[in-house]
Length: 408
Image (cartoon, rainbow, N blue to C red; front, side, top):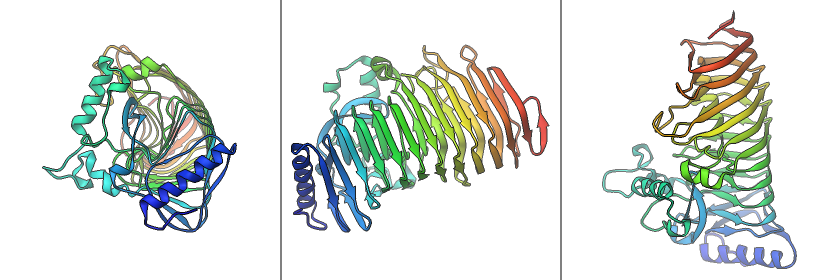
């Protein structure tokens, strides 16, 4: 295909030409054969499958110059920034498949987070000033075309981002060490992520972040992450309300979660709302997993989250609470937008060791509503549960450390 191992320009050009040729022919498969291939940004087109064969490793350049500026979304806000490592916008029938590896070489980017443990030291550049500037632009309603970042701003690119796409498949591949979020479908419809493995312990290296997505299946995947394993989102603050695109109809099943801030998480960028999430037959287990099921929101975000169903989840260890909701996340109670969480059903969860069973904290003017925990067992609990500003909490056949409880 004209690619040359460890030659960024040759490989990027060869892959791009193959993708364009397939698209021009009405669709096809672009094969990454066994070997180590160093590439810059890859942009997929409609009808094209990028197939990373078993034994192939597609290694992404750490030079920001290899990632042109594109219209994208970063932490729930639209902007012009570095292209994700693999990117598609406005396409349909697109796929990444195979048993090969996508290596984001994220360690080279992680210091931009400003975190000491990721290599940042005083005098080195970081994202913090640009991140705040972006959020302020969004709150002021600055047009997206004028929110230009990239060089000199240090906002890390996402690894794989499909945006405004329909009929997306990501299957079989292993993804490791993303610069920032790993799998990030945005404003997409009909997405499948199946038999995928995600590894990466950098800052904000979430495993999969569906954002303003409609109809998505995540199944038989494994996550071992430096942040949330799966985090469902719908835009941050003013930008999320401006687009007003909820995430809805998400099925997560037969997945394995190890390290992470949460196994299945909704938030915090949920200003557009989240409806109809189903989680079943998942296994979560690690001393470095903070929570199994986590909701996070605040009065700056707002957004309605409802119809959340969790069944048959097996939890070995979590270091904090098995189930948590925090409406005081980050900015906390300040702000004029009401976070809403209601109609949550958690059934047949078995927890072998978790410091807390439940930590549910709504706000005085925004209580958590209609939350049912049924036929669940929590073992190894060392701290009492916290329930604050919750109306309609129902327990049915719930045990904590072998004792049936009627209240938490």
